[in-house]
Image 1 (cartoon, rainbow, N blue to C red):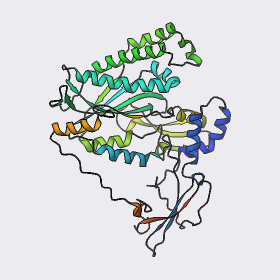
Image 2: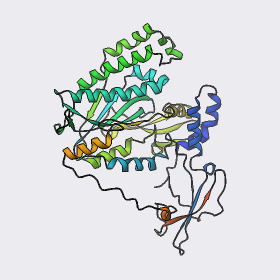
Image 3: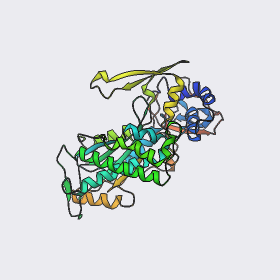
Length: 402
């Protein structure tokens, strides 16, 4: 796949030093590490390898620099997403799957930025608890359900907009474990009921977190450290509608995989949304979700420093997991529950994965030679900051092996 003409890395390399100087003392270490990783990604700074076509008549040689593997890097998510998707494929069931989105209102997202680890974690747990509670109610489903949740913290314009995308099978195991209970083809759970419970639970957990001293406030929100001020701040949120959105079900398991491949390892902005950048501005594509049809796609132009600021808004706390499984897919019980779901649905287990790869093929790249289609063998690996002994073929077609 061709490399985009413009990348986030180019913007960071061009404007990052000035941005660091302008914001010295006001940027956390995690954000600075993300910047450095993306700037170095697939450059000689990280080392790499040289691959040559096994066809002696061709002899095409290519140099590939190592990826930074940072989870915020737009270039490094492809391989990780593919590996994750392969593991998920064996877990899918032949039932309708629903897409449910839980969004924090702006009054909460404003304080979430200063308390990412705590409030993002609450968003995950409360949305999952909301789903499992309503699903277990005999008036709605009366079953235990499975959920895969993915955290996104951005809108199309890279503003702070925390929300969880949840993929849920259209049914579950009866509370007594005796049967599979299926839902109607185009309906899972009532969104208004979900919304009210989500609101109540989230406000209760935020209040408890504040009482336990787990929340921090700075700048314009510093006064919220006071218990009464925090209660007054949350009061309007108790009366507004919190948005829970349920989309119509996917066409089948393959559609679920296609969706997940787009969402699970996405970052705040992809390189392909970038249009242009110069000393004064960065222009990129945005989507206006209030409009349907082709007219919803527009462009936005930002000052380069504002672009970098918005990009770094979405750096996650160290060790924070942005993909989580709940209910029947929770860690520790997932394997047994998947086996039970397959049994109740009378579905054969998937075939064992092919483990034919060995040390003999470890030096063969998955991408064939762009000239003749032959296999590409790694003939040299070089360390960070070093240059390879071999030279690339004149055409210099790029091979992406990350």
